[in-house]
Length: 523
Image 1 (cartoon, helix red, strand yellow):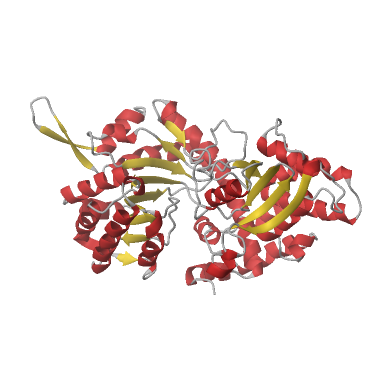
Image 2: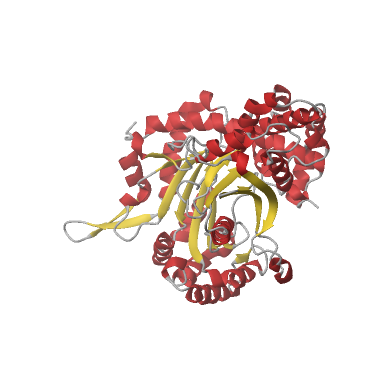
């Protein structure tokens, strides 16, 4: 059953669901007919068939040769003619896993050659979790110490933290499904018959992930409200009917197209606002030197913490984005160091709650949360406690005071210390009636499950203001520019800081004023 908030939206757009399914089903594709287009395990099976150089596809070593060179570089020494076997779903602990019940960590594709191995972690949009890559590397290097071992991470797009956090991905080399599509397009001429038709169907399936949305789809999607688009693409697809799932996937492509266009305009607007263009950061990598596929998100203004007195830094980023709607997002806390500073600030400023409520009355969305990350530093919406300002009243400082001494970083304390500290903090937080646990005992269960691996925790304040404009950014550049300036100042003026003067006195100032003076041009 779809959650109520999703069900209402899908019922509201039932005509659009029907229209998109009609367009979608007009073109025959065997993978869609079998409903296997988004099944990761089926993609692994099809790819393993392509890697089998003696299989009926007739490609020989052509596909494998090009895959290895695209992923590992032109000087890659893998000899595809020496492939001995291609396996899928390989348990990293062998049959012993069946007995102990740990059946989740399985290598998606394992290629064995005469003197090499190639491990492929196939995600198809699902994302790395639980230290899978690290486990697979350790298993392969222990199992085949005398061979040259290669490791590939295959996904639709490069994860946003891939290059900055290679350790999380155990230094796997990245390759995208767009690369796979292009390789097949360049090798399809080497085969014919029914196998070629299957490969063509697969190419068309992958093409839909990257090619622009068709005019018929766009016509239907234009009738969907911006807020509802955000709700639709954020739903749990496993809870949807098949027509609704197809509808949601098309709406997401429409959203991504709008966002890509809007981000380009946002960047041009921000360039006219900032004093130095170098302060603009494309946080998630479109400016990277890598030629691999990346996902482009918000633009952020850097250098915020330079404005704080020493030791009082807690603002992480200010993002200007078009995620669903044009918006400004201010994030404070998030890392243990900044979290402690934020908690100290809240405790020492009794007027913080009143200022926060005032922002809410001016149309801001505000959320204070205590977040818990597992050993891979993964944070989901299921493992944090919410402190809603409008509900908690003056309990916000109690909330901050309670957690201040329990914010921990797993690398700076033994796992047992982290676990005990967080458990003690959770007990206190749950005892506060004003604090909401998002899923009952989920957080306690999470701590029990992750305690042996170490935990990181932090306090995060999220402020978001959605701009009251259409996404037609080209026509609204001037108004967006003024809103960006005014609302950035308004949001940051939540924080009242003090700095010493030459006379020894303390002068109070608002962060928003200092920030705009430092980063924005006077216009």
